[in-house]
Amino acid sequence: MAGFQSLPGFRDFYPEDFSRRQHIFRNWRSAATSFGFQEYDAPVLEPLELYKTKSGDEIEAQLFSFTDKGGREVSLRPEMTPTVCRMVGEKAGALKRPIKWFSIAEFYRYERAQKGRLRAFHQFNADIFGEAGPEAEIELIALLIQCLAGFGLTKDDFYVRLSDRDLWFFYLEALGFTDAQARSVLTAIDRYEKAGDDAFKVYTEAHGAMPADRKDKVLGFLKIKSLPELETALAAYNSEKLAARLTDWRKVLAGVSAMGLADFIAVDLSVVRGLAYYTGFVFEAFDRKGDLRALAGGGRYNDLIKKLGYADLPAVGFAIGDVTTGLLIEQRGLAPAHGTAPQVYVVIGGEAERKAAFADIQALRAAGIRVEYPFKDLAFGKQFKAASESGAKLALIYGGDELAKGVVKLRDLADRAEREIPRDQVVTLVRDLLAGR
Ligand code: HAM
Image 1 (cartoon, helix red, strand yellow):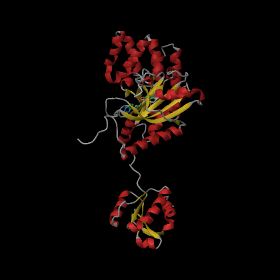
Image 2 (image 1 turned 180 degrees about the vertical axis):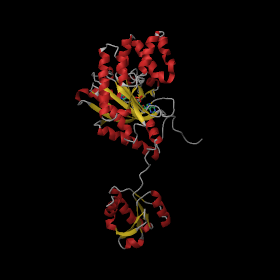
Image 3 (image 1 turned 90 degrees about the vertical axis):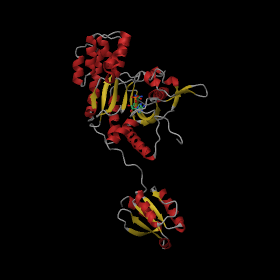
Image 4 (image 1 turned 45 degrees about the vertical axis):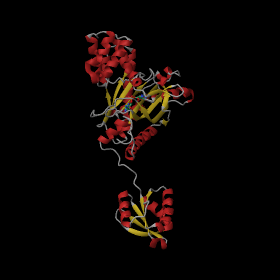
C-alpha cells in the first residue's frame, strides 16, 4: 500500500465534505447570534488536571493526553465545558450578566469508532452563566431546537428529552437512599436503557440488594413521561426541595410551550447524563427514529466554576455535535448542493486576446463576481463545453475581431442568446444581469 492514511476516527474534509460542514456551522452560528450569544474560542491543548475528576471517569479514560517537552501533563480537549468555566471564572467580576457565550470547535476523545462517534469531532457549545433560574434553561432548549430546525428538520425528525438530576437526588433522598447509594442508582439509570437489570449490578455490589419496594419506586419514576404523571408521583412526599423542583419544571415547560416548541419536548427521567458535573436539569436531543446516537446533550452545572477555584456562579449549557447532525440532515435529504459555481466563464480566443481578458477578469473578481477561465489555449468548442459544465450563468467571449471593435460577446448560457457589449461596460453590465436587473 502506498502513501499514508489518516488516523482512525479522524476525518479529511474534501471540498464537498467541507462545504457540508460549513453549512452546519453557518446555521448554528446564525441561530446563536439571533439568540444574542457571543462567540469565543480557546486552546485545543489544556493542562490534564482540568479534566481529571471534573469531567467524569468515562471522558477521563478517553483523553488524548501526553507529557509535553517541558514535562507538563497535557491533554487535547475532549469537551469545552471546563475550559469555558476557567475563562468565565477568570473574568467573572468584569462580565455583564447573564453571560451568554457560544463556540464552534473541534474536540478529541479516544472512543471506539462507531456510527456517529469519531475520535475528532466538532461541537457547537452554548452556555449561560450567572442565571440560577429556569429562564436560562428555556433559552438554551429553544436555541438547541433552532440549531436543528434551521436545517429544515421538524418535530417529526428530532426531539429533546428533559430530565433533572436534582429531582432524582431529592426523590431518592425521600425514599431513604444515602447520598452514595443515590449516586450508584443514577449510574445504573444511565446504563438501564442499554443494559436492563444488569445496570443495577454495580449498586448491588457496593450497597447490597435494593429492597423490592424501593426498586419498584425507582423503576416507576424512570417511566414517567409527563408533568401530570410527575406531579402525581410526587404528591405523596412532603418535601420542600421536591416542591421547588416541580415549580421549576412547570416554568420550563410553560416557557417552551409559549414559544410554540412543546411538540419538541419529552419529559424523560431516564436521561441522567454520564458527565460528572451536572446538578439540575439535564437534556439530550435524539432523532425520532432512534437510528442515531445522541445529537446533543447538556444541562445545569452550578458547582463546576467553584470547583475549579473561582467564584460561585450558576451555569447551564449544551453541546451539539457535527457528526450525528450531519447524518440526520443527510438521511432527511436536507444536505445542500455542493459548491459555488462560477457566475461567469470567460472564453478566450488565443494568446493575443488573453491580455485583455485578464484585465477584465481581474476587474470582475474585484467587484465580487465569481469568474473562471481556462488556463491553457483551447479550441472554442472545448471552452464552451467547459463553460456550460461549470454551472456559470454567463459566458464572456474574447475574440480578436470583437476586441478590435472595443467589444466582447456576452452569451446567456441558459438560452444561448448572444450580444456584443462595449468592453468598458463589462463590469457594470455583468453585475446588473447577475442581479436580475
Ligand atoms: P456530551 O454529551 O459528551 O456533552 O457531548 C455532546 C454532543 O457531542 C453529543 O451529543 C454528540 O453529538 C457529540 N459527541 C460527543 N462525543 C462524540 C464523538 N466521540 N464523536 C462524535 N460526536 C460526539 C458534552 O460534551 C458537554 N460538555 C456539553 C455541555 C456544554 N454541557 C454543558 N455545556
